[in-house]
Image 1 (cartoon, rainbow, N blue to C red):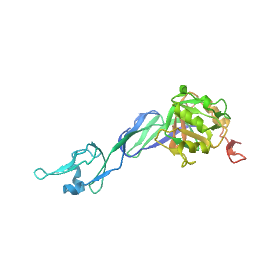
Image 2: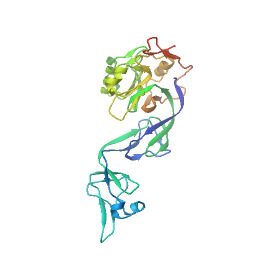
Image 3: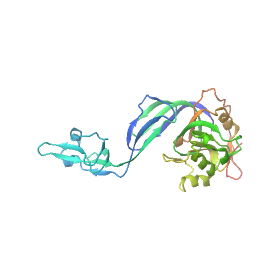
Image 4: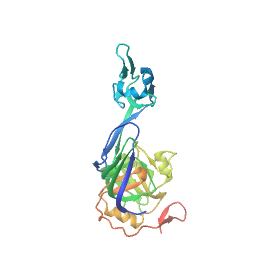
Length: 299
């Protein structure tokens, strides 16, 4: 584990229901919307090609709306004939979520909207219905696990030394929109207070497992938990419990204080957008389990 200035790749998976997205070759900044769409409820299957008396390959010719169009109840989706017409109408308000291979339609109610934002300054290298990928140069630091939605903001030190715990008293609404760096340990109370004050994320050496369960539920594990819900974003750098940040990790945080940053939760990485000469990294820290097996420590 070490800070590196390198060419980074961040892949952003997309939910079903993409309405618009960035184009390949487009330049974006961290925090820019690269895709948006709608969330669906339970879909209703509607007879299509067979009800119209045509083959699935002829369906596009008789459709009166686009394949992914939003429709109101009673809207004619497809129609054939004139004097002896056959028509297929939408049974509910919603969107045509899918056209099946046999020519039937899946119409689903729209229950919400979603957006996906870039976590890198760079160029879009892939954009399809399942993923948007961005490549760009940044200072990068990988952690062991991350929780919550992707986060963006100004990097800000929340402690005075790498051995300090992030105290709730050091957190207030003046830090809204920032990514706070803790030291050895960030407890559930500090994380919850940070989220309530509008802080976008907490980066810490470690977080107690009990604190993670109290925030994200009993099913949370050490693999992380990417989410699009309104939940705190946390990046554990070294492990769980308590883990004092070694100098090789802490000193770059001091040098990069105040810089724009982003957290890509799925890969548990912190990106900081600063020049290549902003930090000097000489060696990688050597880490080991503490004697009580409850934390990580620098050797």
